[in-house]
Image (cartoon, rainbow over all chains, first blue to last red; front, side):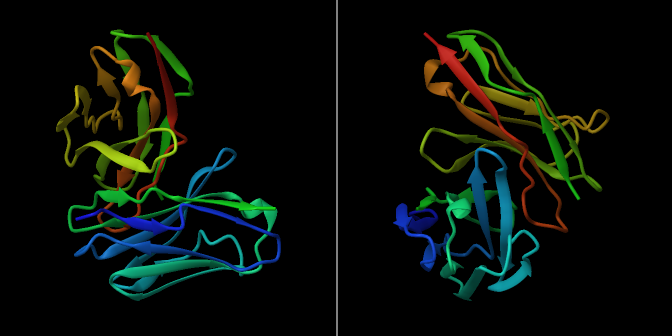
Length: 112
Length: 112
């Protein structure tokens, strides 16, 4: 398996624009997680899904953020409109029955 | 919910020195415990894990023992290498809530 695949690896956008981050989890994994990493706040859990259903979105910072998982092999995290304070590295991870999570390489988002 | 306390970094060592990175956690019940490592510009990688009290996880010369009585899971390595320079994260996982809770991470710098 190729592991968790995220795209794009880097994204630079202007404030106010819509940003969509994409994730393909490991086949057979039934949990998918979105994390955000910044120097100030470390690793924050934004939302996670089980069998494509959102279980906990309490970490989503505000209504500008939304996440979907239309099927077992694809998820998106959307920010609309984006703001400079959203600049961070966004990680997607997936896990199976043993609970250990496997992370993608991350998307480095810069909002100018 | 779960929480993790890791020792402040950076930890700076000379090559072949002994490494200890302390980790204590609070969690309900008996979580599984994980150490992840993040190399510069990359996602988190699972380093080792332990699923029950007194278990010892090990990988690549690193070890950590699940200590229920002290709620600790300290990471050790007998002889570090320059290539071990990275950020290390401790994380408990409850079976009920399947999302990992990460500590602040400890940066390790190994000098030749």
